[in-house]
Image 1 (tube, rainbow, N blue to C red):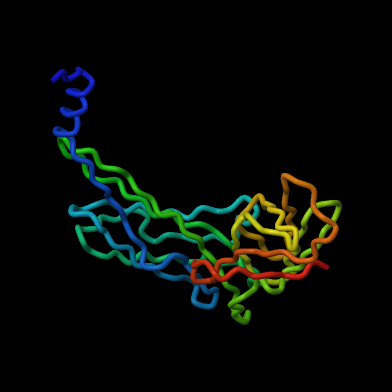
Image 2: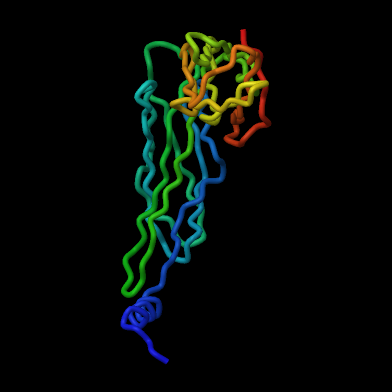
Length: 227
């Protein structure tokens, strides 16, 4: 039996190195901040078998930079198997919010270095919705979007005060033509166009979209009329 140098090298690497997946797991898939409560909290569990440093940061979107949100403890040590509560505070503003706003929160962990062990850095990137005080909760805001074929392209208008999150892909009916949006969300007051690799049929009168709930989960597909 002939064993190549390459095979021996692979065996040596596999026997001398151990790979571990170190990660922080949030208890929910979306952070909801209510303006009247001035902030919110989220529990994050260290699922690794050793203590880790949890790094938390808020990411402002280019088209929705305000209002500001502060993480009270951006860096904190979390012991193995323990849960850390992370607190977020909404910055004071001279004006009351009139519409919802969208941001992202990233939870990252940098594992401790150990000899002969390779540990991977895992991050959780979750949406953050900021809800204005006094605004009624709408569990299905995607039903109030306005859709139309304009200039040979599918266009959607969000004239509601709610953030709508959905998959970038959509389907025109009855042709089944696939279209794609540049973003997976549409902010209050925004208009967004979809692109398609084929010509859009003049007979299409509906669009099937795949929205996300305000709890961060995938909702049932929704079919809207083109107007």
